[in-house]
Length: 374
Image (cartoon, rainbow, N blue to C red; front, side, top):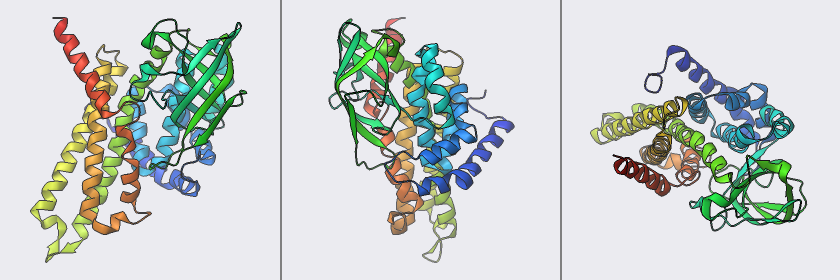
């Protein structure tokens, strides 16, 4: 089964992606400014056809793509993933006019997309969002704020989720496509631990009409969950790519670093720790592939599998990178070292697109739902 054993062509493709990310994408990433959208990098991702793959691939292919890019260049992986996250609701739920206007530019890396769900008081509890879409006769006026939005405030358009009030909770949310130049929309960049662009947005009577709705009024939470169910396993793939990079760096370091009359790998404490890192990484990788395979096959248990994959993979990556730093010693703490970079990158995925605690809640809910159905 492809979710558990990749074919030769898939393995070769992944190897080519890892080499491409190191040779062609990392130099562009290094020229970028941390915390800012790297438009030359996006243009290169479009030029070589990888952004097109994001919108035309299934979940497993998306996971392989993200894992392979993360191994060689985390900035390229993140730039690609954020285009997919912001553009996928347009692909799945947008009108023909919306798709024709925005998606060609996103695929080419000319236009920057963003997924605007989180708010200062509604991060993990997405159904509690408070951004108001007040009717104004011909459409709505958006009033409120979004926070922790990747690619903000530099994106060219935002997939924005706001409360239209058809019903309480998740049932009263509508998704809108909001161009960045709409009057009343402003934003500012946030200085974050991880190096990719994140900002906040303020909506002061931003006008939106029926032509800006993605899907149907009151169905925005479904639009959000359809996107997150696809991308959650691939967040796990991003984490696995980082874990594999940290593991390979650790193998090379411990096999060659002399200490206590031999090399570090000769020490049982070191060898056993590396074995644990490798085992956890492989387990996470297989769970990610299984979740992606479930999505591609239309399995009804995608929410549980996606949550398990994201949970295990992101927690595993944190463990592996942390122990890799420990085994490298002080050198790994120096600015510019691969592991210093990964140490900053690896923390955020345990929070965004549903924190680890949220994933555990989803898993438990799905498990007990199965018990109740018996």
